[in-house]
Length: 160
Image (cartoon, rainbow, N blue to C red):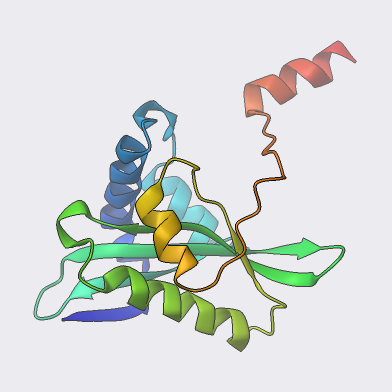
């Protein structure tokens, strides 16, 4: 029913639409400032910082899901694959595309000799939590996410 393949530059408009759909689902539609142009530069420029897979409905060109990842380094564990987002469009959820994307991303973790894969899930997203629990994932509620936005960083550095 689905084909999973590496993402291509021409997939980015559809992938960005999936990202926007995810932001709406996560009640943060105004947080998406990314553009296709930024994604082209960051994913296909001279120093790509992310990769992705797409799920395509067989016999169509419609991308119905994506898995976006990058690499991080843990001082305790070494090289890790970080799953930034796993998105399947609402009308296709529950049909197996998410599992295929997740499994392909796990395979990429091993192909690239990473010590493991890390990701986050919102504490209220019970469908996603249930999905990850089926894999036996460790869900660690101890760590707190920390972020500074570009404008905040500029202000901080100007004050020093």
